[in-house]
Length: 201
Image (spheres, rainbow, N blue to C red):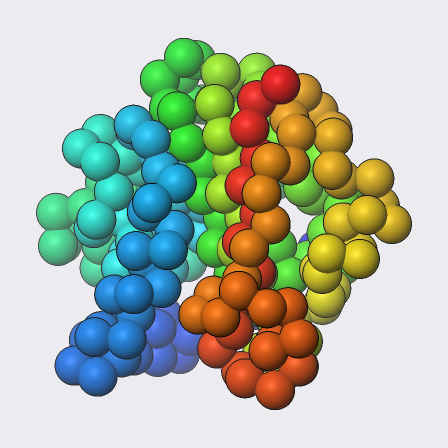
């Protein structure tokens, strides 16, 4: 399982530096728009990183992050961020019921050895919390290979093989790709993404 040790001070500094680069911010805008079009209501941003998405989520949303340096930086910027304890094992028992409508996990699931098990645990907890939809964003094949902290390549085939289409009270209602809605682009373009949209059954 991924630990906080994998994402220390140097990682936090690099994430913040990249998030503030003018060109990266301009390009990132369109990737965030692709996520935001499926967001409804107060949202949990799990693994919120440098907070680019969190800053644009509806009022009352919450960012969860295992890196204390990033959490501190987000709080200084006035964002609602909370340190996530990996020992929680994706139970989210400290979050209120019937409060959040959307759960977003962007570029996080691929960091786990057993991504299927992690996703099931997360969806089960989302169901208990009353979350209406979950949005999972993952890198394409070459994007996955570009980061040594990535552990599981999650593709459409992986979702099918691990019975993750209908699970834990959610149905996978849409699979799409960005910036071009063709899966194979991810074999050649490092910033290609797959987006999974789960709706509560």
